[in-house]
Image 1 (tube, helix red, strand yellow):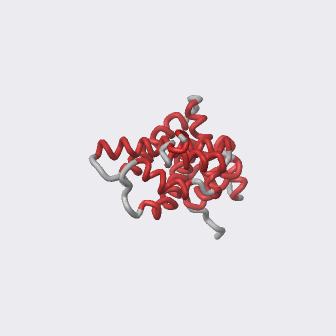
Image 2 (spheres, rainbow, N blue to C red; image 1 turned 90 degrees about the horizontal axis):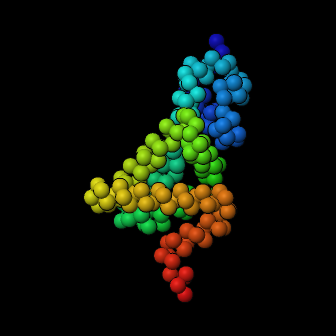
Length: 184
């Protein structure tokens, strides 16, 4: 009997295909061809493209949370401390393709395209909830600080995609310094 692909195999192939070609190019046919399997194998594990896209985006988020875990060995006091801990990890060039996909998904969501219009807000909410668990304080304060951290980090990461790493690192330093050098 030949090799049987598992759901994890198909998902790993989908993640790799999305990183190589973008989410908009991820189709059952292209994925099946890349993996050397029939379309039916992909459909068996992911009955719809929406299911596949959702799993890919969740997989990317999980990879980032694993990468960030060591930065948050100690809970942050606020969004600035969270940014200070997260930026050196997230600003690594190895994560650029992941954020390119996230911003592609965000653009497709902003344009009203499904499944992105439904999935991306859920992902952002999940990230804020995850980050809130890494901040000290009351539940309301933790959520507010987490939302500020995610918004700032996402803005810096988008800026990194558009203006480059040097410009984004400079902007992050300015934010972390509280704009002190802007007054001088």
